[in-house]
Image (cartoon, rainbow, N blue to C red; front, side, top):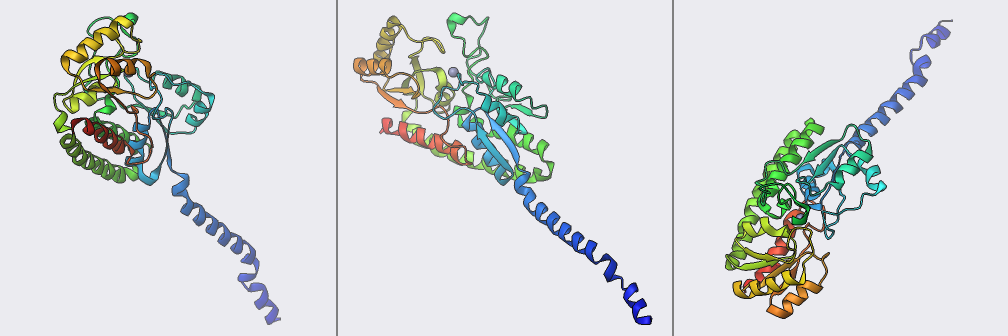
Length: 313
Ligand SMILES: [Zn+2]
């Protein structure tokens, strides 16, 4: 009798099964929690690889980043594909270049129907060059209506972009504010160190006369004291006439320009003509960095400065 009572009162017996389920649940929950840092990564889309690379640097393991434009595509003209809208519908942050460069991004953002999306214009705080004085007329080129938007090609603007990224990431994930802060500080320090190296590397070219195809390189030229004496395009986005090219030949000769910087997506015919007529040497560089990893923004300048340094030697 007593033995049976003992059995009935055994507290383990009735709650045994639920207890096992609870243990399993706890275990699963722990597994889910352990896996959550990977699941909780902040998804970031960027118009340009340069902005994406900086986001990778500041966000570290806490972000998942992709870029819409490729390194060697003309950043003014990107085809708006439905697949981009689908990708952007799943991200928390969209990094725009701004200054009317990536107006195509607006269509992607709108098409994504992502109400929670934080759209960040990375050009805020940049000292904008070539701001139009008066009314912008299409005949004067219509791709730089708010001033020159190629600001990421001055590496000093890297930390400006990084600060926008840090702010947006902190807003999206305040728990990692200290990490983003530390990475932004590291980015500034690395940027200062590398900029001094690039400055030294291009010092022999200071004051050198150069020609560019499009006006993508005004920030870069200012940073390294290169003198842009002419452009293949008479106005941004406007192809050259024979008359303009002839005038450019005269200018290249009179200014002793030895370097022509051209993006790979422009045709070779006009630069080759100038090369033949004047002996100017064509250097081809993509306007954006190849990869979107943390070091790629810096590597791009490493490549450009190394490439151009050969002209000084
Ligand atoms: Zn442009």
